[in-house]
Length: 198
Image 1 (cartoon, rainbow, N blue to C red):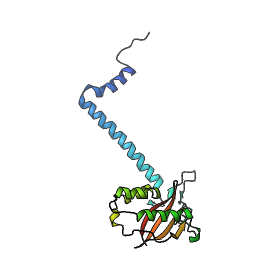
Image 2 (image 1 turned 90 degrees about the vertical axis):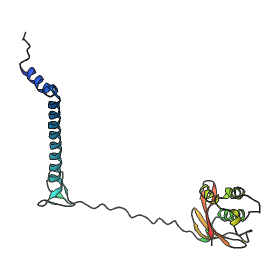
Image 3 (image 1 turned 180 degrees about the horizontal axis):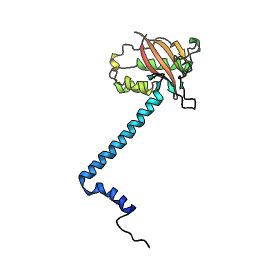
Image 4 (image 1 turned 135 degrees about the vertical axis):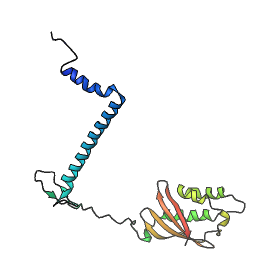
């Protein structure tokens, strides 16, 4: 049976890994040396990757890329052709194809818009518009003072001016002005999402 001693190969290995642990100064020197070696290897790897992959034709960099195949030649990049983007404007339909439900919504909404009896509150006015208005536009109408609405009655039917598959722009005449109303097709039916003076 061999006699184990502090000498031999195991003792040499033990002396190597115990050397940095014998004092804080040795530990700091060891950490710095190992950090420098790791940093140097990483820098050398990045430099060799740039030199091999990005320099072509006598050290000039450009839009070329290195062919990773066995040919060892620089390959020029092939441009990627994307399909053309279609126009984002909505499809227009003839005015005569305006849905009757959309025009009726515009007329009824305008009738509720001009309905602001003296002494009524803004909440009552908005409540009258709620069934015919989108939720987003209701937030805008909540800040309107109905006393500032100049009209008091609708004087004619709604007439379509622009028609798309999911929206209709119509004009509604009142006793003081003509309203331009945008009606959109929602899950809950046709609703007004905007109005302006024509």
